[in-house]
Length: 370
Image (cartoon, rainbow, N blue to C red; front, side):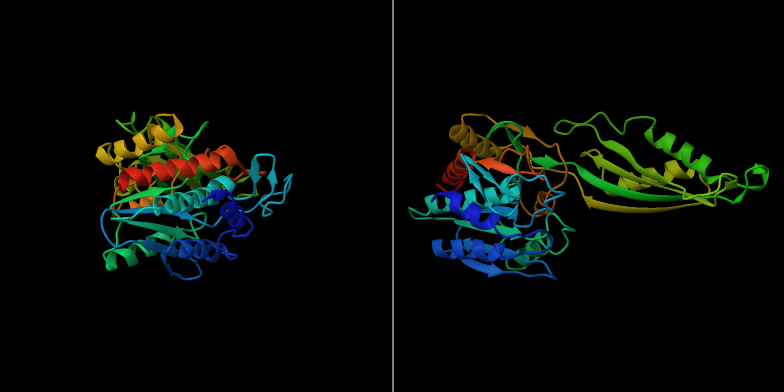
């Protein structure tokens, strides 16, 4: 099966998160035609799909998302949802992130199903990875756990490669913590600071303390954790008034030397040294995780090297993905297309690369489901 026609059909669905726009029906029809049992799993307003063929072990799962980010503010040379083929390049929002990968996996599954299957193949596809990620993969995994259908290994089709197909496999990701801080003081006249308590001065000392030294020097598989101040806001229109409060926002991308809870405790202790009164709201969108190198990762890397001619670097960089949820249940890695145009105007994928990814996925299935 050639992945190109399915990739084009998916790209023509304007599934800007949280809309589905028929994308999962297109995918479901293609899977039913191959013999998959397809189950629609809507949660809230999110469209999700789980499809499986076979009932035995090992159970190999491909995970991904049909939702895409908006097309942006113009500048496209091809219609964002036209799936236009110009020369040997396929254009469209989602071409590399990650409808192309979904089509490649279906093509790989069709190849593997040309001979008897002892184990099972599944797809876990959500419609809210680019959105809040609350009614998608998390809920589907809970559904699968209740039915005892958790896979033995899962591959997420995010665009991991930097330059050429086969150069990077992600075996983990850093965690992400967002914090909203309000430091409270006493409002007063700028000419009489002794009658006030300036929260801006306290906030400056807090932020200096938080950014004075690196959080760590990294670990075996992770780069150093980072803390970034993303906003400082006082909202004071008057030049002669000491404000009552100052606010800031922080983002911490953290490795396996920390947890969301340990970082929140550190923040509260550090802030408390410089501010008597403050409010801190912390949200952790994902903890760090690692699928440690071993037989499964070696099998994955070997299949990719055989199919692409490149031995992939094992990496944990970048932002978050739905792999952070899957890691709670089973070993997971990520491998997809080259990500240089994801979320950009004129997002695109060379057809040869799309077909090459299908070949790599086919090689992976051959190794995991011999």
